[in-house]
Length: 140
Image 1 (cartoon, rainbow, N blue to C red):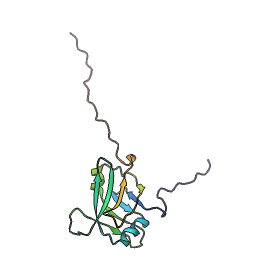
Image 2: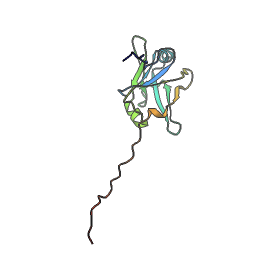
Image 3: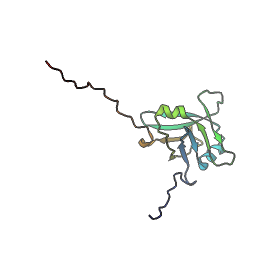
Image 4: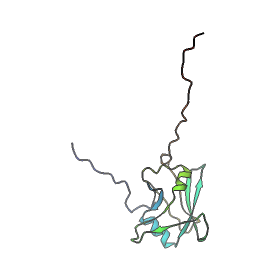
């Protein structure tokens, strides 16, 4: 059997990326985190548009807002993230594997990140099981 080339699962730093992790976290790669940190964004609100299947992070300076999530920037400067398992469950994301997507960072805009989530990132809806009658012979 011959060699095969391993395809990297996480893209390199050239593109701002956002990921949903297997632990139910939302993480930002280095490029994304640096842009948000430079704009001094510490807290975000999670926004969800059900019809468009769009997700957004809205910056907020209100640290006391119970809906706000605190961005945790990594000390080494190589990314940021926060726990969002309840949100990911709410919108139906399948995070059984890491799922990354490119994003545009708009630090001077109200929605600092806005992205349409690909259909394949959602959990598959299973058909409900139909409980049928068992066939029994009835003699008349």
